[in-house]
Amino acid sequence: MSIKLGIALWSQASRWVDYQAAAVLVDQLGYDSLWTNDHLLAEVGDPTQVKFEAWIALAAWAGVTKHAMLGHWVGANTFRNPAIVAKMAVTLDHASNGRAILGIGGGWFELEHRAFGIEFGSGDGQRLDWLDEAMSIVRPLFNGETVTHHGPRYSVQDLTMYPPPVRGTLPIMIGGAGERKTLRTVAKYADMWDTGISPNIDLVRHKLSVLERHCEAVGRDISEIELIISPSIYIRNDRAAARAAYDAALINNRSTPDPEATPWIGPPEAIAEHMRPFIELGFRHFIVDLPSPYDRETIERWIGEVKPLLVGSVE
Image (cartoon, rainbow, N blue to C red; front, side, top):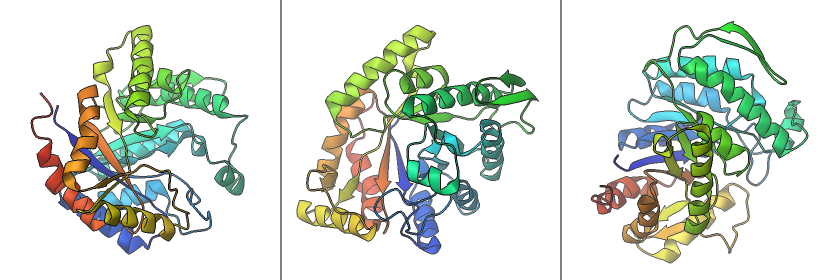
């Protein structure tokens, strides 16, 4: 498997025209995947900033892009009935000619749930139970099965997806690294896993070993799951300039830069060096978490200059 690159565009603190233009640029440059986050209020900085809804955004992107896979990084399971989510995902799949990915997680931002009147649950554990139950419905629907389910949270009766996904099924990407519940759900249902944690190689290696144990427990080969890591990256020949661009983006999002944060910054060679240990660990898909204003230099140089440096890193 070759290395894949994706961009996750923050949907806050931006004009629609800039947000969509960045999506078109990512697609035109040949990126493998294009993502937006699924929040109803701005989750970084001031929550009253401009924020676009994710499903409508992806549907709009489907009409102006041609190549990149499209998905949520990641969707909040708490927001929507999973059977309706499956229907929406399949519709996006047809609108994009087979480019949809269902990215999903348990949901975490209590303020937006309270503001929009969405049940938040009693805690992380309950929301992750809801996620697992939801995936037990969505996975077979994507595989063309007829599903009847009457569970503690969700119910469907004799449900089949008409039309089915363009490719006969539709990939599920689950984000998160909870060892007891999230990674078990990944092992059972996911085609792709985003760690959802800071890209610390030792911590990621540990989480991967936990996922492998869950896969063994459910009788699944971990090689069936595409591994994703999602760092913050800013590319400049000068590290100080890269850090200044990163900090300026956070300030644009009404957030105070954290001097302890460790984004991957600097020239292309430095970024490639950050990526290589994760490639050796089995990660083949990298998604940059990119706030507005969407840094064109980073977008262009990551695929244009960094990726060629990694040719030969994957056997």
